[in-house]
Amino acid sequence: MNLWEGVAHLVSHSALGAGWREQLLNILMPIFFFYVGQEIRLATKESSSSLLSPVFAAIGGMAIPAAIFLALAATFSLPARTFGVVMATDLPLVLAALALFPKATSAKVRHYILVLAVADDVGSIIVLALGFNKNFSAAWITAQVALIALLYLARKKSIALPLVLVGWWISLHSGFQPTVIAALMGVIVTTSNKRFLVVLERISYFICIPLFLFALLSSGLTLHGLSITSMNSYSYALLAARIIGKPIGIFFGAWVAQKFWRAQGLAMKDLWLVGTLSTFGLSVSLLFLHIATKDPEVIAHATTAIIYINMLAALAATCWRYFLTRATAA
Image (cartoon, rainbow, N blue to C red; front, side):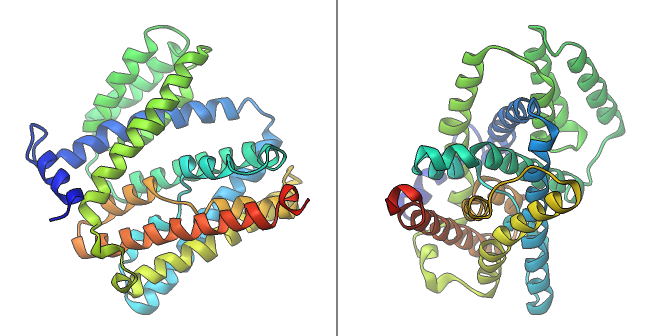
């Protein structure tokens, strides 16, 4: 047992009990997606034309990789239920990579990639909620709807945050993914307190995401699992669908928005940069994986693929930074 597994073993036998991963998932990810909902609310203050292209790009960036993976899964008899692993963009990793680019470059694409990443994160969570949760309760759903309506009426008042906590608690019983409800509540709650948003962002990125990743990686990753020899046809299918399908899907979605709705978009070079950075996928990919399957072998191989996907994404971003930006060329 290595150190990583040892720490996870200690946590699993602590006061949290054997279901500690699920408990962390139900606590940490709703906080992060409440913040994501706040980001969506702020983004929608922009004109609809500036949102149309990145939203269509997000749809293409989800659909094309998933279609590629499902085709490979059907051809080689792979676990098709985990198609969502290749869909979502990891916003924290994308923003971290974008921070390394010259300001002139990051300024052109930051808003676009922020809207895109938020859209396909929420889209992936909705697919999870509708496709993988059959334990809906009519009574709790009624309570959930009533709470959301009440929250909307009180969205600008101090009582809104206590109502958010009640809404989260109801979501644990209604059958909806708490992350979906949290994102919806984040969109509804209106606050002009910039300090609250800054604190929420830091909690999300520096506490929720790291602990969430530890919880999921500790069950599907070992030092031996990082070896390239641990990759199999399933791992390579995930990797190919993500690395190839994500940029193509984003470009196609943006083209559709511009062709049929004359949406404002990016120059081709900037759009391909967005597609390259969007190949980063970690937290929501792992979330989808662990909800879609409980097979430890599938989880192990998929986790290895996810690690290599992000390594390749980092390598591609580095190439963009040092060889294809104007600042470097100059």
